[in-house]
Length: 109
Image (cartoon, rainbow, N blue to C red; front, side, top):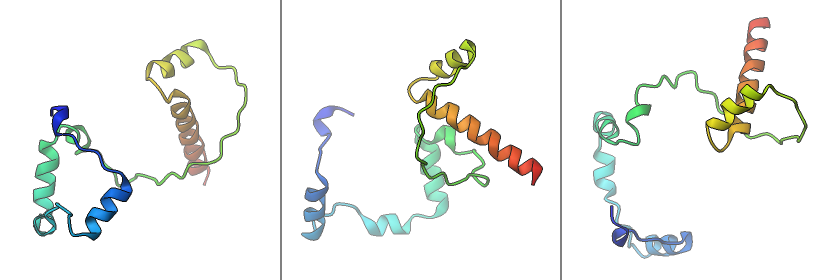
């Protein structure tokens, strides 16, 4: 998509447009979509294609908790592995540790 077709609005501008009836969403068409229509559209969308067949039935809602800064010594290869996964590697290390804790609690409970 070329940048000449991209338009930006503030939340306040959108709220005013909607209040004035300038909403351009065809809600009748959206409401008429069946689950099959939505799934077909998702399968055709490259942003969703890799997420379609994930089993979300065991997904857990995670609420961010307050973080505590510490100093920890980890093996260099562990740090390298997580850093290679890109920005947010410390959050991913935290997620791995949290999963370990939940599995420990589950196996003992």
